[in-house]
Image (cartoon, rainbow, N blue to C red; front, side):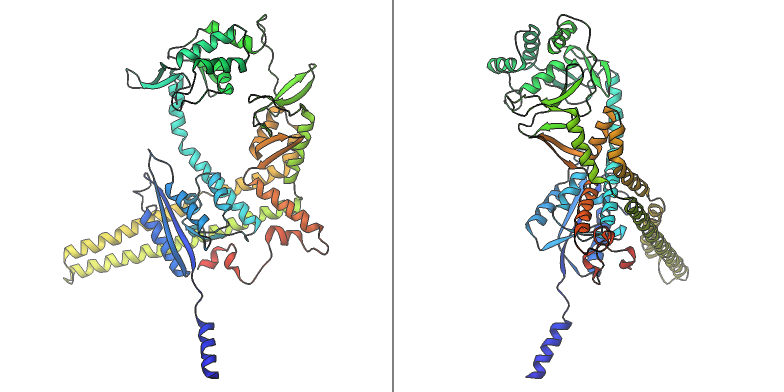
Length: 537
């Protein structure tokens, strides 16, 4: 009995651990489909082999093929839903960063699921326990992937700009117009029969000076003004935009330029300008007031009602901000610009860390950069060896054909397959040799920007202050005397890491903040940690 018990324990000890569940994700654009090495089959083979070599159990496979007409990612959404519902599956296998993310929203979505992401060709595994420096560098790669996606739309933007310079409205028709195909085959806009008369009436009513925007809204609703597609009432904010829009008198603004349109205007220039006079409160004078450049214009929304918070000058010298109240009377009081500036400065101070940490993370980025270059070099050596091996096979088969051991048809078939593999090797070699590593430089620049953000904010002109805040922060709101905001990626990681570092430093007997917070504690089992490229060979 004792022997049997020992045997059972021995079996339990030597029994292999249960494989961990993983999902595969592959993505390709229709333009890339024809390129060897980018195809879906090539990606799936890479991911399946990887899972097999590491005893990972594949439970689901998700594939997205994007076309020019449909750029959405249905399978990505399905994968997110699956991972959200099946907590036993925490691993994603994907070829590389730009296959997984198309924008920063994708990054945030997956980050909230607490996953372990294996980026096979980059030799990186990311999880919640990864070092802050590794997470930060991954964030830089995501930003670079987004920049790549943004660049794909540049040609379309150029075409839209060219169309605009010809006087043609280049995108979706504004309210009151509809998109149609003109006589020359080009897309143009023309007045929409149901809503255009209401637009004309709005201008005439408001030019009389007898109605406020809210009164005009009520009058328009009583007359039956609704959105053509949904039948919903048109809000006051839309009416305000309509009355300010030059397109209704024949011009339009595109990329900061005012262009003369070829479409049919709905109102005369005189009527449009009269409406602007009434709206600006200057019916009796033709002298346009100099527009003040408010530092926080367009950045804040009211935390009570969600309307915009705008600036206003009092007594010709003091700048106050207040809720527009477009959705009704709002109880949020006026606030001085200096108060907002102080609170924004406090937010930016969360990004500031000491020079030692800055230099240390910069070194970590460059170190990881060097490791990935080594990975590329090793891969190139392997691919060249594979190419030479295939070439040797072709030569041997050719000798067999000459000696009569195989016929010409068999040689052609075998040589064709080997040469196709050689072409794939050469394509992969070229990709590795021309890899773009600019994200490392950009990552260092972002680090330095974060380090100096508070100082820059305190010394810049209002327009530059606004640009800086918009680059670093999002979803800013003002409520009950306080600003709430979110840091954009990857600045949120820096802010959170600094906060954690401060908490660790405050603990009695704490060890090095760098080691505990930025690098993370070392452990003997790196399975759940981001691993170096060497660990995959």
